[in-house]
Length: 139
Image 1 (cartoon, one colour):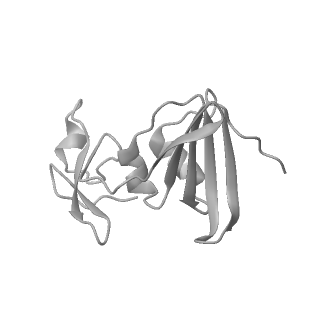
Image 2: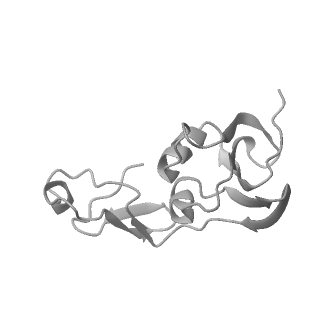
């Protein structure tokens, strides 16, 4: 199998094996309108197996969403066929509009227009809680 390099865009490397589609969902990348390549379950010295996502002509990503769903990922910015910048997403202190509260009694389920907001409650366990009802977030 041959996957060519990209000229301008973003490469997300070191994504946990089998989670590339979930990462695309959280990043709100539409595969119908975005040129992309997914390399799934490829070998990795560090992880054993990993996924790689290549996005052509994409200029920026929500690194908060990426830090939440793929904290070990590496983001490579490509311009003119060369990697010009590398970034490592961090576990964000706040998530806004990325996940939804599952508590049926939460005000966000009955009030339209409220932004879904979560805060990092425990970094070691990667636990987020709803700002409104304190319900633990589900992945």
